[in-house]
Image (cartoon, rainbow, N blue to C red; front, top):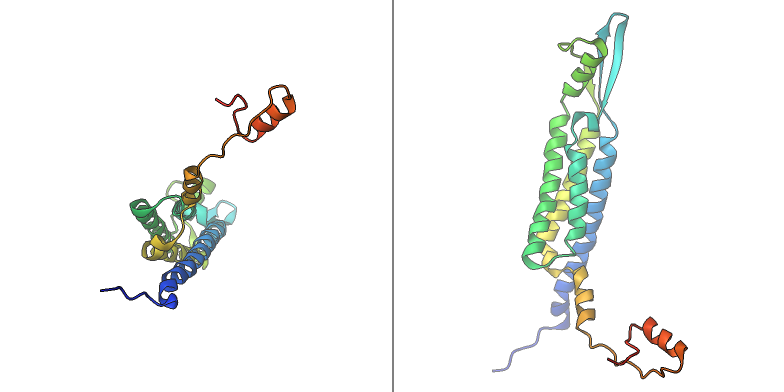
Length: 209
């Protein structure tokens, strides 16, 4: 009983899905990391500390509140690149790390959206009173921007988990190159030094050994 060949459109469907998912994952991962790193450098909270001369305005950047989102964004970028350097089970592990990095950014950013401890520390340093706290505490929307960046990285990780088996691997090209038979060395006239140098440039052994 002969097998019925699949139509060309059916056979090409996984390839198209792999290409689309690869493009979306790269875009989401790179954009998510960039957005997260940008957001952590912005102002997340404002407040005032009472000092002898009056009220001292204080601000806290995202990196002052928590260093987790920036660190995980870098981990996510590294994992996004590493996805193409590994195969099979290794690719699943790296894709899982990519997804977890995004999820961790979301959790850490949302937790820092209402955190005033960084400003309390600055108030203690400014006043010299370890029990000092800030008043008129307000927060900006940048923590939520960082969380959105984490969500993009999470999406990239989920795409890698689902479609990563269809993506190419960087190592494949080098493995194919290593499997190719080496070219036979051309005969070199030992009386002509220029031919010896040309053979060395080609990676050949001019002695013919």
